[in-house]
Length: 113
Image 1 (cartoon, helix red, strand yellow):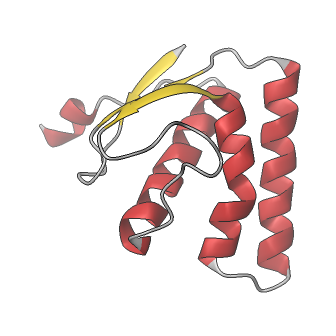
Image 2 (tube, helix red, strand yellow):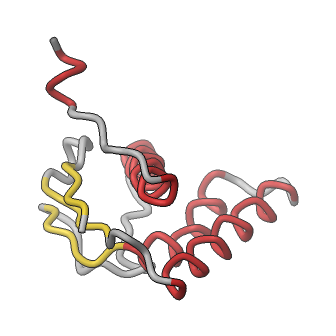
């Protein structure tokens, strides 16, 4: 399991991502990435993309302990306010991508120095 500190001030806390991913989680992630790419190809909005990739994100999240968010589910990812929601989804995509690629999560304290 990988515990990731959420950098979005509106939703402080942690997200726990399964690591390593099993085939069902990995395939759900891959299908969601493809669905997101398909949405963008059809000139969808950022909100359309976020909604398309949400099921794949939730397939790999085992839990989250975030203030101000409901239970982790594709419907539970906050859609508004859009600026914070888009930042949250982008951050979570980055964390899942690091798991898929086998990369370490950067220490936010290290970049502050």
